[in-house]
Length: 145
Length: 73
Length: 416
Image (cartoon, rainbow over all chains, first blue to last red; front, side):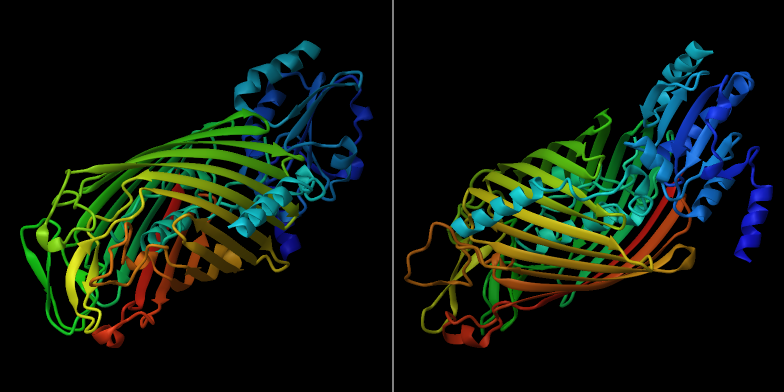
């Protein structure tokens, strides 16, 4: 019954993008595009505040040159779905409940975002999301485009 | 009096040192981030209590700092 | 001054996270409102109080916030004046000096002129310095007809070890003015002589706090705090007296205004542990040791266990155990003919006591926007009713009556 409800939630949730398993993440396949890679979790308050801005990025910058990819670190899948129900996401989400990828990246804080240029090189790292720094974040993206 | 101060000192030293081996990764704080797991959860209760006990007893204060939580930003 | 005392001052307010710290956390631009009312009633016609509180915290974005709190405290009832019971009717002079009250034989003398309203307001501002450092500044003011208190506090918090460890450094400065009804009595003079001095007196308090909060694992954390407090100035209770009794009959022959030292130096060590269990229930245990140069040593144990149910409901029993030693200058009474000590008080709050609080809290975290709770507690305080030093009729009196009080609290929090 729970699985059915979850499935239903997936279908009717305000998501314009997919939720994938972390194994399906292929950053190399994004070569040629600037990637904004964000690590988040449902229990992270600044993450809640960053979502509307990240959705906005997708409308502002051309889809063939820029994309937003996020990695969700919720240990409880249900909590991730409940969060996405309330706060929609237009970007792809890769679920990493064990935190293996986060460990590979040696994440120091939540949320963390990486700006990757079109050649696949990590150009910037930001720990934390601050609405006062949004202008700075956008300038960094525009520099790469 | 001497014994009490030694104990205080010891406790402070313990508190200061050797804490780096404990802890979790930044993405493992889902339970710690819960409202009722915050060290200052139910702050209004704590404030009421402090007022009552300050008025009825001879000791007051010394309790409750913030800390823990989601550790975000 | 029962149940008056100082409002939740400085560092305590800061310590409880910018005064408010409602469970639900507001997003940027939102207000976190917390409203509650406390009802406190002691048995035997003693103190009764009702205390509504409202606090509001605004999230200014990027971890910055400002909060305000208003407390109104309304007290009625009567409170022991420090004198011993007698086999005869006793007459005492009210603090105002213009009338008297009588106490029946074999009853603990209670001063019935006890109606007071206190208003307290506090503000707090928290702003990060950088990712791992936060500053918190607060200000408090409290006013009742015979007591005014203002204080300012500052707190610095530093995170280390990927925020698994938080160090807190704080200080608080408080200034109090006491304007007793009927003026400040000359210490250790007879109440019946009504020798009064100035209309007011003052004191100040400096507190220092050092704390460490440490995450242990995914489900638990602990905290250790060290506090140092220095008070200087008028520490006496202007309304409290000490009985001088006949060394044979034990009957009171005089009542002297009490006198406390003009300074107090206190140290405290506090530890708290909180854990989420496998079934999601939460266990919390804390211990506080306090000691000072008045000779009061105390231990406080506090335990809660939160049973969590579906849909955000919870039930939380609570047990608090407290004990303290008497102040060096505490005395049940003085013997007629003995030299009067420089400092003496018969205020039961400075005596040796054990207290127990048993309570239960029931509430619901409805969603991120709303939560409510009801708390019901019973407080009991006991001490030595028949001290060995009792003489004459005092041997048949209860010189430290038990105090029993009921506490009821309703709380509601919401975000808008």
